[in-house]
Length: 181
Picture 1 (tube, rainbow, N blue to C red):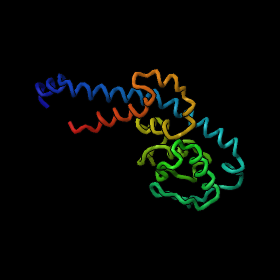
Picture 2: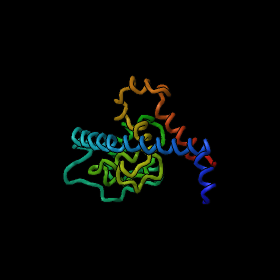
Picture 3: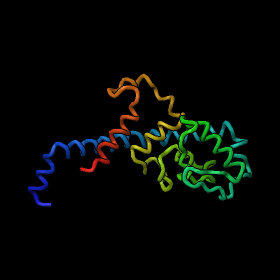
Picture 4: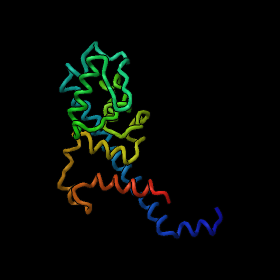
């Protein structure tokens, strides 16, 4: 790109807005990553401690034969059946889509992040932790896992966007990052 073309691009108002939106999403992601990681780890630990007989029974584990396909998951073992029930119990949209294909169910008893991926959009199967997620995936986790419903709604309502701050951020991301220009 020639210097003149670069200067024109950098002075274009639409391009500047796109760069600002992208930078804003990177800042948001950085702020959420640590918090989400800590919260999911604590929530998973709490579930395992509260329901150890069902979710982490000693001497019993999945053989790895429970393999989800996209939004379909029919567990073959009782342990994965219990984890599936628990994930659905904490899903904010009980009849909503769960992207089971993101998960390796045999790791649910020991890996909090595998558990968290059930609440994320499809295509997150290779994501190993919150530090590898984009802002959209983290916001989906906030929206679909009821553990995060304890976020102070008064503070959320104080945002200039109103009470649906997460949806507004998602819409903004879609508008700026998927815009053809």
